[in-house]
Length: 294
Image (cartoon, rainbow, N blue to C red; front, side, top):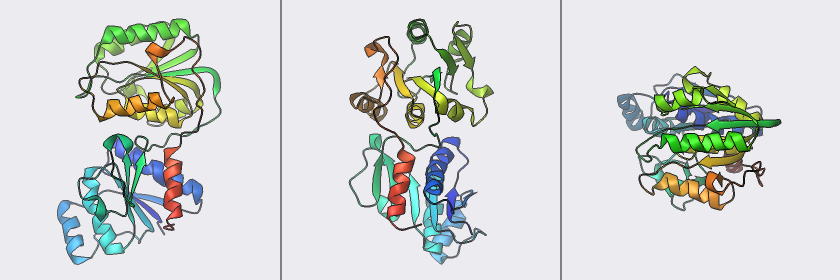
């Protein structure tokens, strides 16, 4: 029987978060199984909420997990039909009280409630493995509604890093990276460049797991948390921010906690190893188990 059901809207980031928690639960309870389903249509979910009859031809699970606004009605419909706990990841668009547990990043300023756990960033599936000596990753984001992009300043930071810190550097981009930035990075000496569009889905977690250190443009918040989850020593390249929003506040909090080293504060030596393990998926899974749901 399916014991953990993940409602997935098909978006890679949302699926990554849900499976991060589900797989952490399996590590704590090895006998568990995981299955994924697409959300019901809005009409199907409303019908299930009213009638108490479920349109999904699945066995009753012990727990249901979902991330993304498109999963919220389905989560509540399954809660109503199956009388099982439902967990929503990220801040939901519906009232928090409707869900059994809400895992919400600190930067979204979640309220202090019994059914809310504040997380350091979004959960992910990245794990920690034995580190390869002299290995380093560089992760490059791009402009967004929250931040601008100073290409020459960024390239200068990356060149200085490569010159001052001899290392086996591997760099990858994101879907937001401008084509001109990617082109200049690919012509840079001292680093192997793998554009994001040319990497397999599991490539980045695998590389991060064995990298000693990782430098990330500070706009790439999800990649910062993935690097921390992998146990890398993490530094961040500055980007021009348009406003002091929740993402920037979250990055600055990590700097204050000593989890990130800003490039402008970097001494030129190897980044210090993390002082503490960073495993939010495992921490949250432990709290779920403690509630007696599995």
